[in-house]
Image (cartoon, rainbow, N blue to C red; front, side, top):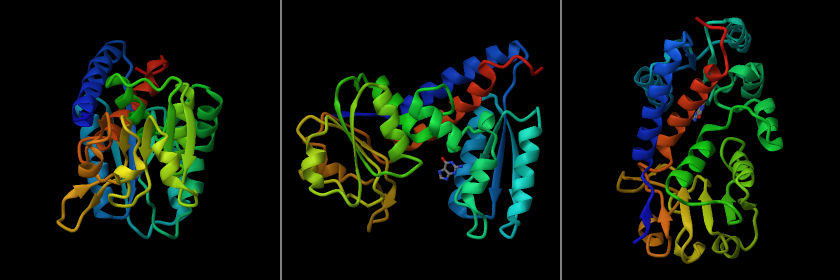
Length: 284
Ligand code: GUN
């Protein structure tokens, strides 16, 4: 049986550590405030946004909600973000994605000040990540690094294969594994001989967005398998990009869905919010 990497437990540990740190920082007069912007009423986004606000409350971070109607003009959203950039009481800005089709998402991401970019999506944050400069890290990949570290799985010198090349997960994941001295391959939908490549992985990270896509033929004996996917199967059960029941007999460690990578994203968002005040002394 593989080691089951318990993201629920590890994310709770991180949140408790952050809560204690926030109390200490508050005693020094440093308080964090996250602006949470949602445009429209997409039910999934509403659930995510509410969970982020709940996590803020738990840790002791103030959150300010900005709920805008679906038909909000792009210029209006740009103005709001610019206002939040200037607001000294706001340390972090989160604009929940996806945005309605008439709004240029890239423009909004670029409008957020890199100093308040707690999602780590701004090109400046991405550039800092790749050149090894301090900056905000994309939350899901940063959470995966924490899952590995806190489960005693070292990346150093290992063959790591990331399946998926999105800007939010695949690419920053590869950068972070490289930063941890892994030997990194990025595979994707056009990769030839995918099974041969994934079978070489000692650490296999899967973010393809296809239900139970990775079966045991894709996994080398003893690999650590990290599943970023989240789907509902034909029986309406939550499942990931990895066929867990099939893969568990070959993997040495594996993340379940739910309860693996999922809870880590918010924990790392909270870490980024705390990061906004760790080194700042200009708030009271
Ligand atoms: N939508 C789905 N995941 C995310 C996320 O991590 N950040 C933002 N801003 N929107 C999302």
